[in-house]
Image (tube, rainbow, N blue to C red; front, side, top):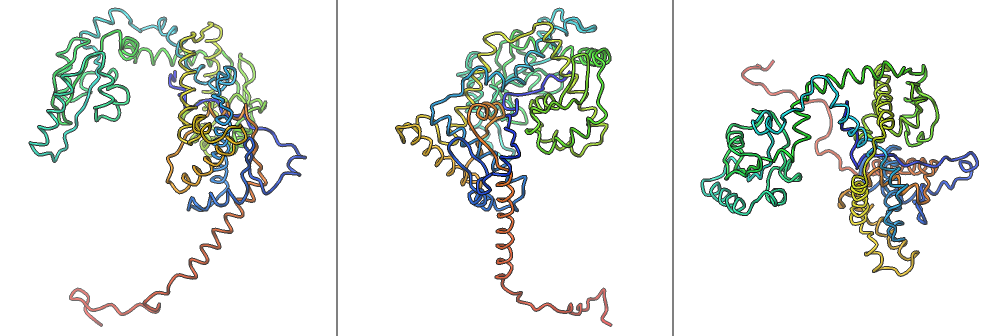
Length: 483
């Protein structure tokens, strides 16, 4: 079973509004998009595309427009001092995350009944080193380091070792470790088999009892301070790793049986429907077209979009739906339908997240809001210093976003991510619209402008210093006599 379905930054896609025939016929072609009280004009999008200095196309124009809408809606929320905490909207946006956590809980229950899985004497097996776990603080020594430089690094490692305890180890690792992969996790290297680390590191680790910290250890990578976690800290991961092979086999058997007994059937036109929808998945977020059936009922295009939005690899999946062989597309659909069935089993078992787990997810979502506001320089505090009324703050926020967009297009500003859960809440709560006619006109205008600029550039290019003509005769060489 795939236990890493989603992360907070990859969740439910925002639902766009449908455009009726009348709206399409009366759309303002000079406006590409609107977000709250702000509008993105054709000329403005044209100028943004020009700043990007890459050939304009429909895909790029759509991506820039989508960013503009997200950023302006972030500004709208900040102007209204709206921290986007509506529990119903947030929980709907975090559906994939919540579902993933529930499936993990359900899987943990199932694992206890899997044949071949041995969960006895785990603490003793961990202490005896059946599998190892470690955290470390690394001080890198460059290969070209002089003895004096190497000694300087060692002395810094010794100074940190004098301060480190189990209580502050993670914080000191974040502040000092030069191993980027583990430093962000407090130095945690996880659970691993013997032989995974270099000999000096493993030898030092095996000398430690769980909970102990090593003296400074030298390896080919530099100097390490190593901590062996207690069994309680790694209990779940250790259990999974020592039983990984048996669990994998049991998982495969469980899923195969689930697929067989759930009577999964794929509709004849499912692949064609999925390929057509892959051009704009967001537009199919409410599509009731049936792709397949099972004992859980109809599996629709809308449900597929829901699940695809839960995967970090959404862009690759969209490409695969359009380009992969029919057999692969069908196989992907079956896998997603199987995930849906597992979730139904978790529902039947009444597996839910407790209040503390939900509070943690909500806190992470609040962190997404704050990070986006600060990155765009539109936090409520910044806006409060610039405008007394909501309309004044909206104008200031919009101006900050436009300034940021100019910097982003010219690579002077750092990219600010508006993760899918946040995008979903913004677009559910605030008014927005993308005008396809205006978008097409902006692409056409930008393409013509780029072609004209290229033509002028070619016309003004100085002539070659050497007139073009027949190639000169090749001079004679000892290996190639003349004549």
